[in-house]
Image 1 (cartoon, rainbow, N blue to C red):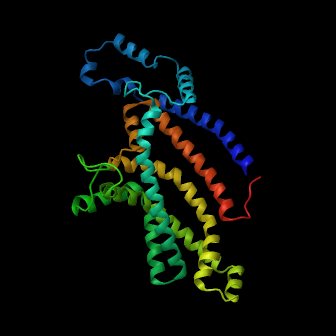
Image 2 (image 1 turned 180 degrees about the vertical axis):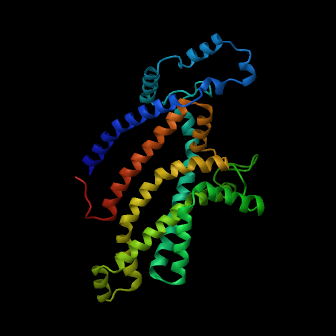
Image 3 (image 1 turned 45 degrees about the vertical axis):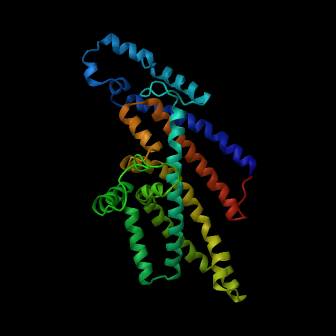
Length: 322
């Protein structure tokens, strides 16, 4: 297992290099430039070509694209992921680390809600197969899978925040109130968490239902019943653990998707995380920050895939990596 982990980490290094190189070139080809986003339009009326050239030299934007990339790569290897243009050369890593706790808390709560409700509804749907409950949960799952996160976010905001006034519309805490882990934080997190968790609940529900139904009909479950074991023990010890194997894959693959979905949901609810930072950087053409957010999301994707493979060995002792 140790050799497998080391091999996967070494393979990830050239993948990150190719991803960063391709992304840097694509961002450079996009219309607009950081200087136009940095300068106030009224000030730009009084600036000449020489002033623009000085700003380009100051931020290193006058150099060829390959040179700019390797300068950024040098800073990235040193650990700071370059310097932000819009915040006057603040290290990108510092900006991301400041925004990472809100994103991690949002993703953790989303995974917890999706896992708990998805497995619960999936097991119920399987145990009561072809009942009204099963049909209701199945139709609900198909609806939740077919609707994107931003729709749930906007509809949740309109119904539960604007119309009913049950939840706040933006932020992590009430302005001027106490920060930290408190009721105000939980109150603000309800809408963005459920907007992100809807697809997780539906996906896990369908996988859990199919996996439980497949496991219930297995020979070892029939043997356990013949031994006189209780249904609760059979469900927990034999059915549920074996049914987790395909579900582990879905959870691991959903983590990178959650990180991407958080960009939209964080922007809608003004949740001060990495997603909102990346969206703001896109509007401002702040290439170092965009690259930093991209690299962090890529690392999370590769780490999630690796943790998924490791979790296989824990869930199913038959799975071993050499």
